[in-house]
Each structure stands twice: as structure tokens, then as C-alpha cells.
Image (cartoon, helix red, strand yellow):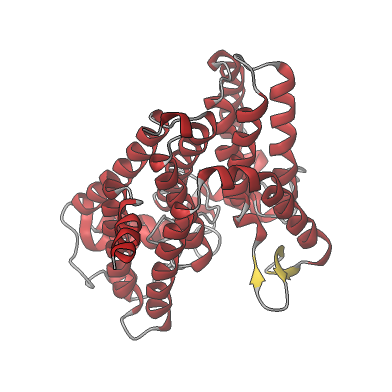
Length: 381
């Protein structure tokens, strides 16, 4: 009986309670919005409820595993993820013009989702074991190769949204590991000049038949739709226009729960996945949107706090990267829903329908809790 009580106490104390409470609030809001978007009898609502249970169970499992075990397994998990990506390259299933899925017989998986976790783990593992007091050129080159391999394989699928997310999370590890801020200034200048040129030559670049070479036609369409959604209001611009109408029509206070006309008259495409924020903003208004952003900000701040107090380099880099992953998820999704970023298929954390994304978030939050709890043997009393 005493041993059972000790096990139960350990099962409870592994949680980081501030983070867990925030995640439970987000999960509750996610189910509330899903209920409004599809109804309680729809199979997607039941599936999403089960996905949340699985995601929180996986979070608990990852939080329990000793952090040194995760560190030792990281290179093998990274290599396995790359092998799966190569499997997609040569034997993947094509759907809607993209080859992103791999049929293993017992399950159909999207290996690129794994890289959102395994890439920052692998980069953190490298810097933890091999970096000296200051980042050297060789460290930067090796880290660049470790990041470039999965990034290029995902781009080839093509899945630019996931590839950019993997790149952003991996690059954040390199930055937190000691990359000089001044090295980013030329990149920022180049991006700014590039955006200026795109805006200046918009008519030429978006003209029919103009080949962008580096982007697929549908990706070119997304960028041109961002610049001018009205150029194809019933086609490529329909998603953006309708989501902006929904967000704007919610006003300050919102139309009320299950009272969103854009939502329930089926004007919002993909209202359970990429554009779920439009449903939320229409029904809960500006105040509801601010409340949701505050919750996300608190999760990100908690992740950065865990990174700041981590007891080793591996934990610090992983926690910082996972906090930035949450930021990129939120920024890109809400940006595309409100028309300031192109539509790239990035879900809104704990709100969008989908088991794979929830599973990834469960692993990420479990790692944060694990890092928060971990103390090296030298620090144990």
C-alpha cells in the first residue's frame, strides 16, 4: 500500500502544474469550438475528444521517461525519422498532388510531423556533447547539415508549411546555442529587400504563365492570393476572404456561442482544422481572441522559463526550441487566417482537429515537464 501511494505521488509530481493548467484550459476551449463547428454528434468531435486523451497520456509517458534515456536515444530516433522520410520519397502515397504519407501496413503515418520534435532534439544533443565554450564554424556547419537534410526532404514532398516549421524550430536551437545576432542582420535585410521587390513587381510575378522556378504553382498561387485575395475571390482567395469576414464580423464581443453565421452557413472552408480561429473569433469576438492569445503567451513564457532554469545544455536548448515551436504555430496560423501570411496548412495548437498534431504537441509538452523536473545526480541532495 505504501509503495502504491509512493507511485501515485510520483505520477502526480512529475507534472508541471502551471503548464498543465494552461494546457487543460486550451484543450477545453478546443473542444468547445469543435462542438460549435461540427456539433456534438459529429464523428470529428468524438475523435478529437479521444485524441486529447491520447495526447495527454503520451505527455505523461514522455514526462516520466528519464531525461538521460531520451538523450541517449536521440541520435537513433533522428536517424529513424530520416529513414522514414526517405521511405516517403521512394514509396510514399500521393494525395492531392503531395507525397507525404507512408503506409506501414498496420498504420498510415506522416513522418514529417516527427521531425518537429526530433530535429531540435538532435541539434540539442549535438551542442550538448560537442560544442565548446563558444560556437565554432564547424559546429555551425554540422548543425546546418543536420537541419538541411530533413528540411530538403520535406520540401520535396512538397510540404512547405511543415518544412518551414521544422526549419524555424531547428534554427532556434542553433540561435540559443550561441549564434551571433549580428549574423542574422544581413539575412533580415535580404528578406526585407526581397519582400519589397515582390510587392513592387506584384503584377508581373503573379501574371498567368510566369514561372517562379523555386516554387510550385500552387505555392505561387498562395503568395499571390496573400498580396491580392480579390484576384480570385471564388477560387484561391476564397479561404482568406471568408476567414477575414468571419473574424471581422465577430466584432468586439462576438456573435455568441454557436451563433456564427459564416461558420454555420458553411462559408468557412476547413473550419475544423486550419481556419478554426475564424470560428472562435466570430463567436467570441476581440475579447475572446485576446484571451486565447494570452493563454498561448503564458504557455510560451512558461516554456522559456523552463529553458532558463534547465540544469543542462540539452534541456535548455530543447525547452527553448519547443517554446518557439508553439510561437511559430500560433503566429503562422493566426497570420494566415487574418490575411497577413499565406495559407500554408499549419494547425492552431490544441484547437485544430487532428490526431497527429495533438500527438506532436503532447510529446513537446511532456519534454518540457521532463526538463523542468530533471536534476543531474550532482545536484541531487
